[in-house]
Length: 469
Image 1 (cartoon, rainbow, N blue to C red):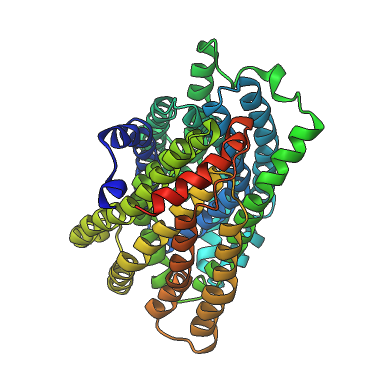
Image 2 (spheres, rainbow, N blue to C red; image 1 turned 180 degrees about the vertical axis):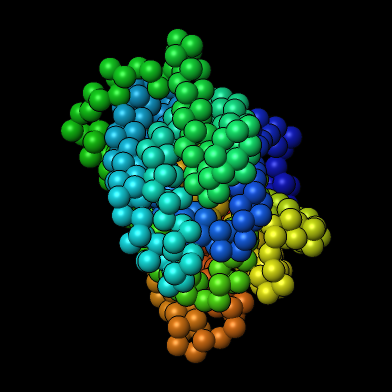
């Protein structure tokens, strides 16, 4: 059975071809956040905490549109496997419309109501005042960020993963240069501090979108530019689309709401802890850079095979990903732990914040490994057409375990900061057994293509024989 889990050389070649460019793109995005945080760190812990709080609102935006994005990926990958180009175009049109609606709503909230947003996340007046001007400017980037994500998701799903990578390189270069000029007032420009970092983010997203569109217009066969085919939706297709993605959207919306509640709890802890948490989120991004590449590869590889009717091979690949991902996560985080001293010092943290940040890194070595394992299971279920089971398990774990535990520890019993932080991941220990069992059952294979549905009977017989090996 171990050989089935390890996989063939071709399996790993596909991961590198699909996943590595995505991982590198994610790494560039994380590097941009790290550059922002290090530069802002020269302005003091309050500035770091303020930008970190604003980043939490950006994460809520991500949760708002990612459900539509992830739901669209189900169709992109499976239609790509079935070679249904019209299906890809229609799915992209619906995905784009729904995602952009979310992007504009969050942009309006950030631009016109930044004070209320900051007050929602923290009761520290100094952090609020520092974050308001940043949020008011960075809100202009939200529709651009959403548009770039929609295009990138489509390109990745059809295995054109290098283009988003190249666009991210250009965006990182623009972000770093503008940050240097405007945060510190270089080259004769005014010294804008955190507002300069916000302007850098907006310009970086403009560059990102322009590079993506430049490629799509040069590619005569690009699905992105076939605008006339994006909105030819039949009633049956729209119903199928929303039936499949509604639970994904529901999951991400509830997850975002749950994270908002957790962040409100953490935003009312010690100010040094809030600054340390902002730095931790940046470092966590390095794990998710590589993990994101694996997650994207799993969705495309499994979804493509399910869409083409190659269910047993898709099932085997899914189990291989579940075996590999936690090992990769633990290995990467071990490197972060080994370098924690100089890395944390580079952010300009004080002694208390440094202590909190170190503690969070050690806690996450265990909880983060479990978390990525749980995520990859749910990600694969969605790619195969099953969007309900993982949603229910994740939502119940968040609202009935982690949020109550964090609220009790942080707001009622006023336990130490690190104890409250550990409660954020308490549900991961419960969910992992349930998700692994469901993964092994194969009941999550629910294709959206005709080719996939036609071979479900064969898969059930083949799976019974495979599991008997």
